[in-house]
Each structure stands twice: as C-alpha cells, then as structure tokens.
Length: 403
Image: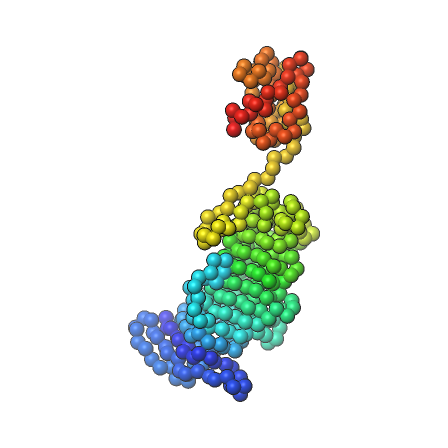
C-alpha cells in the first residue's frame, strides 16, 4: 500500500493557470509497507495526477487549498482512499472541529469499487461521464464510501445532486453536510446503501430515490427543503428502513409507489406525530403515504435538543389508543357473545377484564365484568348504568390502582 501526499496549497487543471491560479510543488510518495519515502517525478500538482499514479488500496492525502478539477477514478483502482485535510473529522449531524479545507471546485467520478472520498469540501459539482451526468461525487461502482465531507452547491436551481448514484450497490454516505443542491443524494435502482449521520439542509430535496431495496437511512438531519421533501421514493423495493432521523419541514417522507417502508422512530418536529398539527408537524406525502409506517415516533429530536451531542434517543411517543365504543361497559357473564365484545373492547384499550371487586363496588354480584384501564384512557367513560340497577361509575376510580 502506498501513500501519496499532495503538498500544494492551490492547484488547477491545465488552462486554469492562465487565469492566474498558481500550480503546486512536488508531491511525496510514502510506501507504508517499507517506510521508504521518495520524490515522485512529474510533481503531482493535481488530484487527478495522483490518482493516475496510484494503484489499488493506495492512499492519496490532499493538502488544504483549492483544486479546480473533475477527478476520475477509473476501473482498476479498487480500495483507493482519497483523503482531504479533514479526513476522519465529521461534518454532518454532529460536526467535529475542522481545520483549513481541501476544496475541490468540481467533483469526483468513481468507477472502481470500495473507493473512499473523505474529508473534503466539494463545491459546485462537475460535468462527468462526458457531459452525460453532473454531480459532486458520481458513483458508478460498488461499495464506495463518501464521508466527512462538506458539499456546497451553487444554489442556482435544481440541476444536479451532491452525491449522484448512477450504478452499483452498497454505497455508504456518512457524516457529510450537504446544502444548496438539487438533491443531497440521488439513488438509481440498486440495493444495500446506508445513509447516516448527515446534515441535509437548504436543498430542493434531501434524498431522491428510484427502485431501492435494502436501504437504510438513519440518524440524519433534514431541514429547509425547497420542494418540502426530505426523502422521496419511487417504486420502493423491500427492506427500506428510515429510522431515527429529524425531519423539520412539511413533507418529510414522500412515497410514490411500491412496497411498504418502515418510517418509525423519527422526529416530526413536534410531539404529536407526522401531520397531526398543521403547519407545525412534518408529514408523510406522495401518492402512497399509507405505505409508510411511522409508529412509534420520537417525542424529541435526535439527539435530545439540550445542547448535549450524544446519541441518546429522545423519548418514544406511541400513538394514542384507538377509540372503542363503549369504552366501559358491564356485560352479563351469562351472554358469551356480549362478553366477547367486552373482551375485545378491553384489549383495544390496553385494559384487562376484572370480576367482582368489593373495594370498588364494581359488580358486587360477581356476575358482571368490567374493563379497568388507566385514567388517561377513560376520557370517553360514560358511567353506564348496570342493567340490573347497579352502576360501574367507580371503574374510573379503580383504574388508579392499575396504573
């Protein structure tokens, strides 16, 4: 495994120097296996030059500065790591303390498997694939990793994504800040991707996708979407899990057809749950919103909004219990059909059937049954009269024993 270091503070492609941008000094090659150092002929003034010289599993370390490039990692360089000045320092939902940036004004095209892009600021995007596709990082291979980067789009309209997945499976997008792009991430039909711990804000769409399966989206922050879409899914496959994210605008998840999606354990910008308070809670939309399950959800943001940057989940909010009418009834044990109805009612309310309880004066004759539930579930209790002249009005009092 070899390690390349680009020492320039400001490098550019051919033609950029004519605009007054200075090119770099020589790079240094470090052979990790032997600890030998050597001067690299030709002075790798650009990231592309270093990529061309590198082999599989090599590491390219890029100094801080601005690099005006569209970098292609061609096939045959599997496992190549390209590291900016802030490699391993998170930029996403919980950012670390970063120093001067390695800024790529352009982008990367990845055609080898298991390539890592780590620790850059990537601005504006580049035209890649001969003009057919544009993006900050364009993926055309398997098992690539894009992490700890700041993606700063041009904010001029909806034309391209920060991370543009064209083909391949197993992409990981982790700990990035992504803003001012059409989509933060766009995924073409594929499987096995993980998108986690990113901060998506001020994009038209956070994540757009088509034909996904086995997709995991977790621990991300979504806010300020121009199209009110945190995550959009077309032709959803199986195994899509969207958990433990914070959604802070109108339509957080839009489902446009396909299989059910697990959207539980997310924060919807309110305690009440998705779409429950108009103009306050974020919602589930698209043409098939019923395909997104959302219960339980988070009552507070992840992590808790107390200034403590930890990974402790906010409290879960279960959905309110469904209404069962009548909520409390006293039904003769001699009528099995009515007793079955009473049992079903109690089950819906999370209650239990009780028999003759002398302390509560509920059904002292022993031939009636009553639902006993937590006080908060007795809002619809009607104090129904026992048909034999008694009353079950004290069932609510008895419920306090069962809290």
